[in-house]
Length: 119
Length: 108
Image (cartoon, rainbow over all chains, first blue to last red; front, side, top):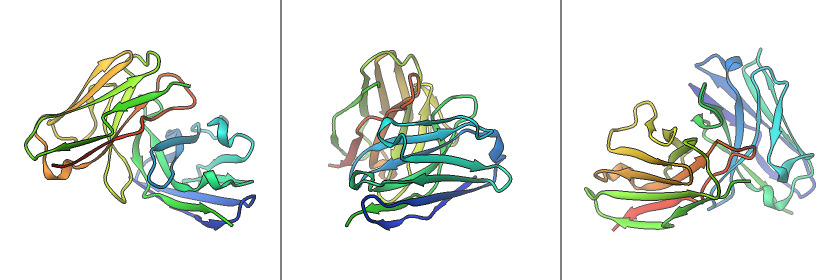
């Protein structure tokens, strides 16, 4: 199982960024997927998840209306579109696979990608 | 939203010692509790799910217990590679799925 994030970087407050996560080594379409973030020196925060078919999405309140999670099962790819970014969105963003049959716990993680929101 | 609280924030221990980390939930999460280990510069690694079931390839020195609102992660004999930050996470009530703030296990 491998998960690899891309698309991070420096963006100004109010700007937008799109993160991608490429998946390999497992049947991507069979798993719920999540994004989890970690601000510098801080703990973990679940951000969003999406069901197997890409028809159901859930978000933490702080990103609702600003972030959109999506997936392309044909390309084994997960995305996170982030709009109207705030300084407090600065974090390492992890793509994570949800443990099949267990629930919203995460058995595989990508290496993470840094998003910095600063003027 | 369920608040997860971990104690202590930092634990200074010697190799070979038995270590006990605590995690409390602001309301019952049944046994839907996971533990993760995170080393500097790395992604978290799942250690325990279902409060007490070890994940794949996790050594037997790691064990979890508890249910409801009180949970414990025990490392029976601390090894060099176990110095890290440990997070608990509930997946019973959500979203959001919430994590504790972490316990850092450092060398004494």
